[in-house]
Image 1 (cartoon, rainbow, N blue to C red):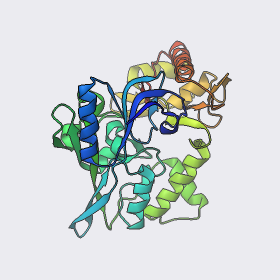
Image 2 (cartoon, helix red, strand yellow):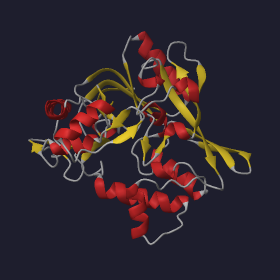
Image 3 (cartoon, helix red, strand yellow):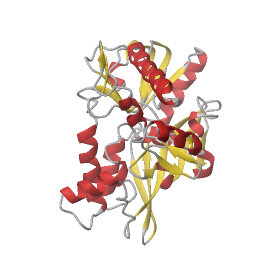
Length: 337
């Protein structure tokens, strides 16, 4: 247990906020010990995974816990399916690469997403036509009230777009310790319907892609668009893509004939990056904070000296300008503390 501990290395924005107490745990018993300490001291809790989806706007007057639970196991279900379970502290991209090296399919479109396995169900992370819910089986959690283990299945997690039970009713009540996925061992479902993947595969000269080829294409696309958090502080996509009623989208089409949208029944998903770019934010920097020059959906700690409040205020300015121009209220994807 450490006191007055800097969390700068533990959040990908590189914000220098401090925690009153900090502990790194590698076993469930250690976790229970530090949780009992927090109960005795009546301390609020902050669980840290890869720190890739959090913005610290102030010091944390409680106990920050780094979950460093490690381990990957597999159970073959039949000739074409395998159940792979990873503990919460496993790095997400390294886990994806582990599965691809064994020719397990289903995660390839989620390559190079920052963060750890334990936080993946919270956000229902997704990219290029795949979401966690598509291959999710269950997760093991610790009930923070009674410190007992529980298992949540797909239905109980109530996955939505970048959303889950753990961000809503279950927020602050459970901590995810491990996640199980149903993956394929052959006859893989290759998803290349996103134009960017098709184009990248064509550039690579690949006509009949494997799951490994799809992963390479996704990695190349992400590297070309998104800044490396190790070099420039960021949390990936800062905002969710908003879904608006079809009638509202049709009205906007009358004013903005080049507006982009993807219809889903009576709703239309509008790319947040396009909205932000139309408001002039792409590549714009205010003191220490900026919108990335290649992807306006990504807010960056441009100088490495930005405070969490500066980043938050910058995001608020973007939200206001998009609402004024388009009548659409953007929602932050990043968790704000």
